[in-house]
Length: 84
Image (cartoon, rainbow, N blue to C red; front, side):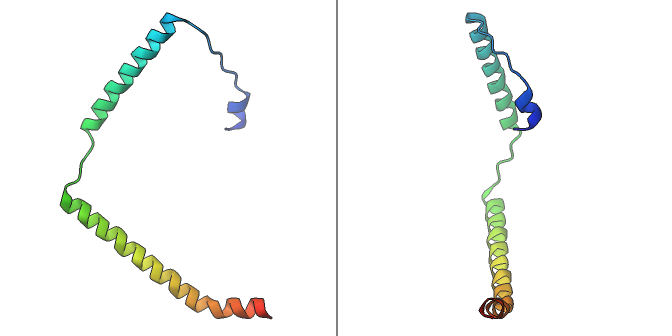
C-alpha cells in the first residue's frame, strides 16, 4: 500500500436494505460483464496447445543447458576464490 493510500480515509456507511440491493445489483452487473468477456475468450484447439507446450519444454531444456554451461565455466573460478 502506498503512503497516499494509507493516508486516505474511507467512510463506510450502513445503508441497510438499500445498500444490500446496490450490492446485489452491482454483483449482477459484474456477472453480466464477465459473461460478455467470456464470449471473447479464445479457446485453443489441441494443435495449438501441443505446439505451445513443445515450445515451452524446448525453451526450458535450452535454459537448463545454458545454466549448466555457465556453471561448468565458472565453477573452477568459484572454487579458486573461496579456497584461497
